[in-house]
Length: 302
Image (cartoon, rainbow, N blue to C red; front, top):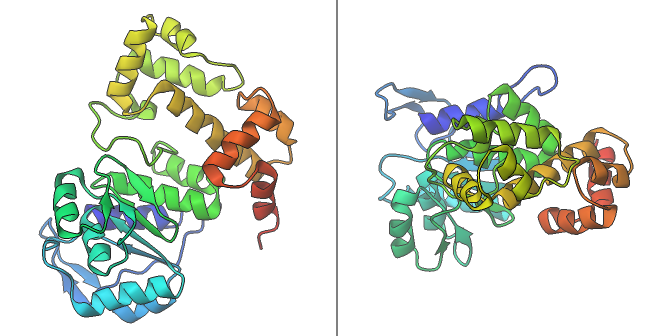
């Protein structure tokens, strides 16, 4: 039920600015479906609804150790073959693996069942620590609340940072966590950090992206040594200060490219890069295209 709630919340309407998507829950046997909280869920659509979906997300189910019915596997394969994006949340990855869609690809799932997925499907490269893994038209995500990260990544990838950030703000979530960030964290992610000193420093950093923000300065503001700050940061977030700052700078650059006509040079300055050339290099690594091409993909969109 958590997975259903996550997907329906992210892709539901969020006011006039984000009207929502054409969302449907599907099953091979329409009607009442039992859930893990004891409340049955009525699913009206059968597998035929998948034939016109642009995105298909396989959700976790209780009996995931048993492969889904052949009709389900056929429907997943058919969706992929006709060009739809196919994703999986948590142990939904077992359905994609059973359909052969993960063969030769990297994938993740809930860390508790990663070894089982790897043993069952040796042709799949299972990465148990990742929050999500994007392999083009096949995307897999980790378990439980990491479903939000998967769905926000899909929004960001297909519709841009502005939309993903708007939805994240509406559901009170961090706007972006890199897929390589660890699944299991000793404490919440930075945007929701319970460590007051660390939280205040990170909030200050977000407001001062135009500054260089060396780790030594962040550590000084947290009244810690550089080594202690880095260790505490990683323990709390699952990532390094450098990686967090890079992700924050690039996410801000994406949104400015989508929503303003500022020159790339000015955007580079605002997000803390010394020049447009440095921003371009980092942007190409993340998005695969230079900033100006990324901007054109939004200004030319219908």
